[in-house]
Every structure is written in structure tokens, then in C-alpha cells.
Length: 263
Image 1 (cartoon, rainbow, N blue to C red):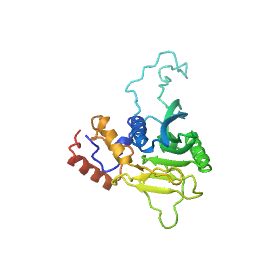
Image 2: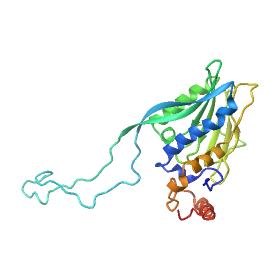
Image 3: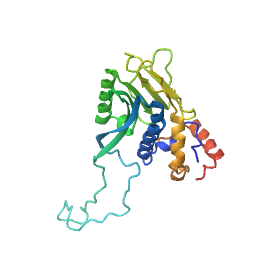
Image 4: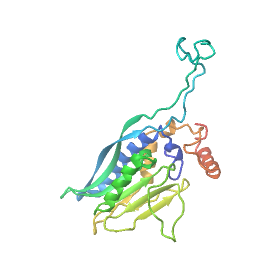
């Protein structure tokens, strides 16, 4: 069944689901756009490898009983039983290799990259080296004739850097940034909340070319349906990160109307 939400389903942000959703969205977005770009352009999936420190386990396991080998951890040789030290469990930083997919729109005749399409991942948004590496890459793209489409469907962590003009700034859960290669300092920002449909926007190409509409909301609904996320999400559990109290009440009504409240 399609997603019951008008736009982004906040339960899809759960860490266990997000990598699968990210990959599926990339592939299905390519499927949607490829026929609209032929024959002047084609759209290809590209990959980069990121070495990241795994975030802390949100559900750590603590033992009910610790078995300690007798004869070790004795601090007081005169009273070894009283001085027996029971170890505790701590977290250590663990590096993991992550492969991130993104899309490139390429001019067929010249093989030039015209537009990059990014769907942000936690590694892009969390504070640290990976976020800074992505921001550095982003700034390099801004200094070239290439265009950038940056899709942020994650409520957690600070947004990517941009500055609102004095008259149009307002907060949002999600956002789509469209930076055209020829514009020096300005970009188009499409902010939307968990209650809103995902905005339709034009894919930037070269001047004079017809720009196809990007219907990300349709792609998400199709992905949700074909990948059976309704069977994979436990809607009895709260989303991660949590919604505000009023948005959670609204989300529960949406789920109740779709018969997913008890799935």
C-alpha cells in the first residue's frame, strides 16, 4: 500500500530503515528522470566511500550478571573477595565504511556533468569530519558551472549551511535546495513540514533546455509501496527522532485513518 502520509513518513527516518530507503529513492528517482532527459542527457548513479565513526547504540545492552574470573582484578591481596572489581560495559569508537549513492545528470555529447542530485544521509549531517568533507565538496560545486539539487529528508541534526533572506526565512522539518550553476549567490529553497506534500521542482539543466519536473513525492510513495515499508515499520513505536506533541497527535490520526495505527 502507498504511504499514508501526504509527504515524508517520519517513521522512515529510523536508522535501521534509512540506508535501504536512501538507496531505493536514488534508483527510483533515476528511473523517473531518465526517460525525460533523453536523448540530450542521461542520469547515472555514482558512489563515494565514507569512513565514519559509528554513532552510539541507541539500544545498548547491559548485563544482568557479570561473571569475573577469580584471581583477576584483585586490588587488595589481603582481602581479595572485598576488592574484586566488576567491569562495566563502555562504548568505543568504531569506524565503518559507508558507500553513499548520488545522481549525476550528464550531457551525452560532451560527457560533462551538468547537475548533481544528493539525498542527504546521517553521515552528511552529523557533526564531524564527514559533514565537513561533504560541505567542502558542496562549496566546490558552487564554484563551478554545475548545478546542485540537495534533498534533506532527515529532521535530525542541523541543516546544511545557507542563509535566509531577511523577508522569507522560516523553520521547516525538511528542505530541498536547488542551486543553479549560473547563479552566483542565490539558490531556491523548498521548505516543507511533516504535514506537507513534498514540493515538485524543476531539475536544473543548461540554459534554453526544457527542465523536467521532479516529483519526489510520487517517487517516495511508489518506493514505500513496492518495497513494502508498511510491513517493515512498527508504527506502535515512536518515530526517531521524536515529533512534537501536536505533530505526533496529527500523525496518529493519519495512521488511524489508514488502519496502520496497530500494525
